[in-house]
Length: 379
Image (tube, rainbow, N blue to C red; front, side, top):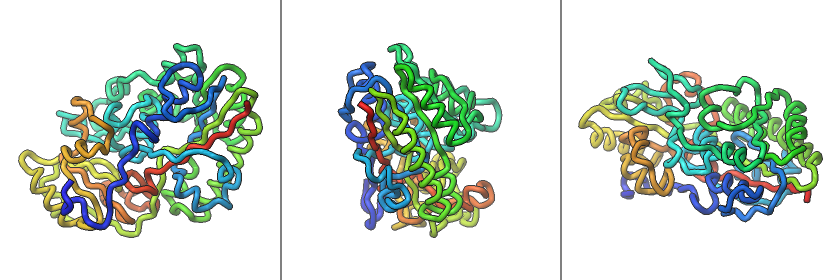
């Protein structure tokens, strides 16, 4: 990456794929359960495992507020990197397949459907025109299917509204979904599922929601973090012998005060056929022959606020993993703009809800990339 395009005030915090990333966790869990051999994280053997997935609880954020989460803060563990983009659909697919984004193909929240001239939102699983088949968009076998084949019961404890959605079908194929709305329901769902040889994922999204609305570190965010802490302590207290619980997250978060609004900057729309991605990772799908001009315009406009690179540079720098499968290259923008610091790239007219947020994630900064992996065991 050239210095002029990357900016001089920051360096991308590239995920540690193959060593300490979310992509390395599923294989290690499988190995700990006797259903695989790739134990990169060297997890201890267990008869059953609970993975407590807290949306938005970055490791740096948790360390900044130990008083709000005394139980979690007292646990030993590791710091992993989420992957790029550091966003929910990408991380869920990484956890669901045990592979980096460049392998599973969930390379952003809003991506172009190659060759069709339309955008696809894989979080909401919506796109203009005909629907997108989850099995086509993310065709890889999931770790849950592998666990089931090995005689381990894969269970997903989460709100009932998630059942059967496109995203769930893409990243959680093979799980037994236990619908649970309240904290008490989720704890009971975990307790029941851990009676046999099982791998149980329990999800909580309140921390992320509070961060988007009021910012990480806000009163509302701290209240949600305290809920998570009590939930983790209660699950840990109910673990049967031979069990392990791992607490992790899909990404961290930053609070934005510097908003670049492309709907108020006509020059940033010139040559851009489709504006994809999200506020901290923009995929720019350019008109024919316009990629170089768009790259130069965006790099100049966002100097010292964002890394603005070509698709080829993002792939070669290993942002999406060691490699990107050829069939997924069309999902990446011709130009990729990744803000750092407290900057976000919003579109106030076309993405009004997202533009009004305070907390954001997706970029290649430590605050967004670093996620905890905390272990509690009942041996």
